[in-house]
View 1 (tube, rainbow, N blue to C red):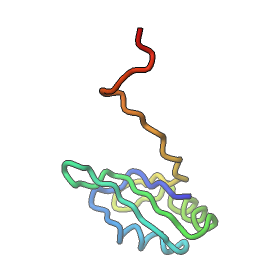
View 2: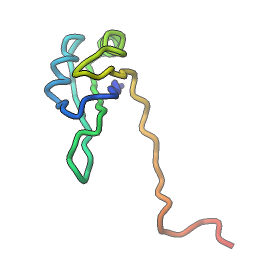
View 3: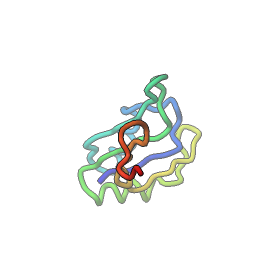
Length: 95
């Protein structure tokens, strides 16, 4: 499972997040999505920790906390939804 962190500063990087979350346990992975066109951080990230107990501690401590002049939104990440594309291709139900 991973943790979703929202309302991040656009100045944040992987090292910053790793440093903060290491206080609550072992961090396995940090992912900071960037915009494809501009390369700019998108304002949210995902952190994967070694145990669910570590994730729960981090969520409890950091949700609503102020960091880099922003109030963080921290919770369990929801599974990624399967997005189907609607452009082009054949439609099954044509008359």
